Length: 401
Image 1 (tube, rainbow, N blue to C red):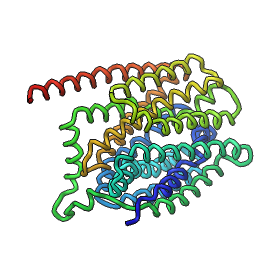
Image 2 (cartoon, rainbow, N blue to C red; image 1 turned 45 degrees about the vertical axis):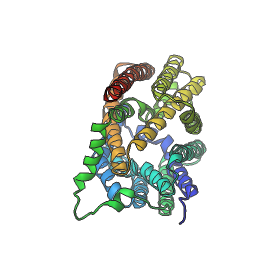
Image 3 (cartoon, one colour; image 1 turned 90 degrees about the vertical axis):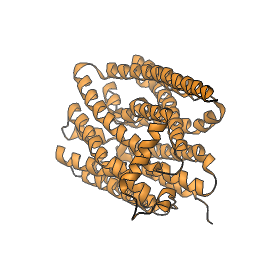
Image 4 (cartoon, rainbow, N blue to C red; image 1 turned 120 degrees about the horizontal axis):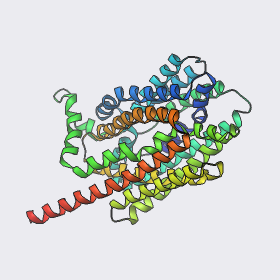
């Protein structure tokens, strides 16, 4: 039997993130007379659209073909960037986000589950953190290449043409996704004529009812660990606040992703070395400290400190995701991750609206300082709660003995 070809996976992950429009789409909105509040609303709409598709797409990924889900995701994401290449209104930008949201929902949970089940099929599920870490590494290399290229491209072509180029890259990536091997343990075990679709979602919910630690980790992922993703949408606005040349957007994002893909390489090492999972909460708190230092300095030369914050937070996120994957034995793996994705999008709506509100009341610098405090407090609170849950579980185990 042919084993899972991780090289195709890594190429797919690289191309799926090698999109030069990532660096400049918020600036494209500004060029088309969208103010910061309008941009925040657009990003909130993106998250709202994602919520509509998140859980249904997770159930679909557990019951259908995950490889095909990734192909569709690449195509609809390309449709978003194609629309933006000629968009000149709020409505068209929102329509683009609608298509991107479908693609985002189809990928969320599907990639992780496809990787895990393929590795499990080859008897290599213990290598998930390594393969998944490397897939994130190549995704961030793709981000890095796309963003670095955008800094050069923007000096020769318009942002609209960069958006059109990104649409073409998505089309190519759909071809790569179609070459991934398909493995889906849950779908292969289902009697689809006898088992209702609701069963898949119920299996996922039951996991969280029976496993308090998994529920706590899911909550932390949604509320705090995903701050790396939430802040990602507003990086260009930070550079804009520095009042420096446009190419600094590329420099800033390049630095961010250099540190993040270093974190993806370090995560499997930390996973093997650390015996206590509680330390991951403290690691995330360190990321909050780095973010606070960057917010206090608020100068282009402090970009490296921002990169450290993103690296540490990203490591924590990867280790938490691995823990969720290990908690699922066979059933509803993609659906479990879709609860994560849906929760992310709910919080992203609030985060975007709060971001828009804060920028009306305080400076962007102050807003980032508040975000750093939020991260540190969250790490401390969840560390204490997780410790209490573990002590209670140990005490109950001793009583049962």
